[in-house]
Length: 69
Length: 499
Image (cartoon, rainbow over all chains, first blue to last red):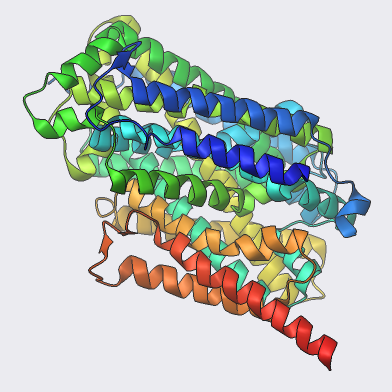
């Protein structure tokens, strides 16, 4: 599979897990002083940041020549 | 509820020194210019290193709206606004779609404005003009929002009438901004962004300390909200309903894609010293929302618990109410608030100056230089850009004063992205797919804008609070836009192959 497709799929998974659609509406569980669904969204957001930073630092960018191909 | 205490002479001296230092930087930037060209004035000769590129991206991206608008929105809808953390990260992720190739092309072909890329890629007068008009309109409304936020920030800081303080705030801060902006161009804007970015970061850290010191741990605030007798208040801690979840997804897509297409953001891509610097700067930006957006959300949560009862546009001022409580608590609290207000001014000015500079570059190079006087020298275009800045800012200051209490910060933000996202095919798709043709892209862009504005402003039964089943009108408009651009391009290509 092409690397860009894998990256796209990872982002789709991160978005899908970052939005709390899978939490029961009556959930009142608190963790560290905030609702658990909020904490899960923050954690996924942090993973998204880490993945994005990884791509920016490690993933090779197109060279000037590539850009014109 | 305690009211905001006007700043004393010491605080004004501190803020005065800070504001004067910005003009001084503008003067040094003017002295540091290497040549009187558009590239030097608007891109600083592509010389931005890592610290400058990170802090200029940071100070430009996080505006007065992040502090006041985001805490106000959290106050209105509760914990759900954690979605803002995700859409601010989405902006950086969306840069990956097109920044690498755009940067490479910009360096090779010496682009100055976003329209330079469109000219290079499509060579279409119609597309150039429509895209430029959209970007100028969007940036002007963004700039207007910042000017209005400057005025609001000044209300209550002095003993004078709030309406007069608003006017004086708008005029004074704008004047300082336009002076250093037209003196030193992007070099002044970026150097002041470095100071403003640092002040802004300190301000956010100060804010979280202030909140903890004043109200105790966040768990107490959450518990207080959950124990409220008002069901609407309690609902601010519960899992969002389906409409809100769709809105959440919509925000991630529209802000993620739309923000990367801000002209000043594109010009910062152009201005980076090297690809490596740009990549590292953006990597830092991926974590910036945790230092800014998240803190603004926490402020909003504290406000729900401890400053109840604000509604409508007044809720955008909720941070000011919290700061009033902190300010009156101790001398340390007073000075922490002074530092925070300096950060607020920094946030607004650093966002506004970049927008102003970007508009002036497009008016001067893309409209005047490209169509009205193609033979104009670089020095003349640079001078004209400065004149355009002054003319535009005079008009916008008047508008900001005229509209003083007529628009919520966030409603302005929503419409901007509806328009900006229509540029996705012209920039993001075109840079990856050579088959994209100018005419279908132009028609698609026009259709997308028309559909978005119709959905946003027409009184339609299925549009609630400006959204279509929770989705921004701009996202709905983007669908026909892409279909026309891609379908039309394929059709034209096939017809040429057949003929």
